[in-house]
Image (cartoon, rainbow, N blue to C red; front, side, top):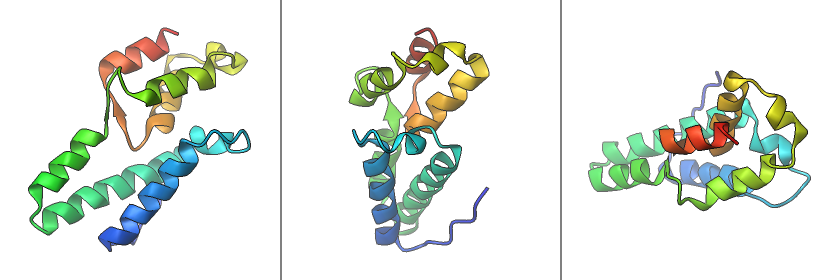
Length: 124
């Protein structure tokens, strides 16, 4: 685990946007970022610190909105993006359950896919 020592909310937001921009890019030269456990860990830490920053500032509504926006439901465009990444990939069908779960976590991080989403993606 890395120690993320950024406490300024605006710097955290900049890091969050940078990570999401790279992870959601269509650039075929960035596949390592999509399923990287390191990037996923950083993304989760940044999101948690953003939520904490909002709570520390007394903005519980903003903190709750962050928590809600991290939920990945079946209608999220991220689900289709994930499918497009793994549908034609030989490696996906060769992964065991744990491997698929890890890849789903890394891809969606800092988002939290619902059980319904995870189950549907594992069944692909």
